[in-house]
Length: 61
Picture (cartoon, one colour):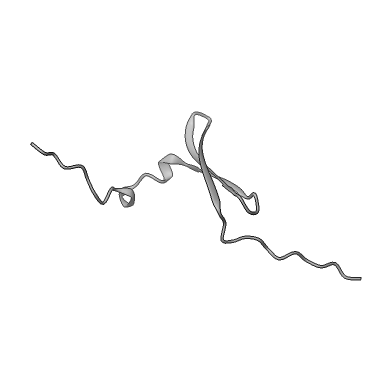
């Protein structure tokens, strides 16, 4: 009898994102709620010009 292989659950991953500190540096901790894959991304790696708000605060004087 041959083994039946279960279909891959991911990708696409369904990430649950929390924040953690690793060696004093803030990271986004991603955990897939389907396949339990995990990854950590330093917060500094996600802060760049592309994340600038589309609706900047206006100074109403």
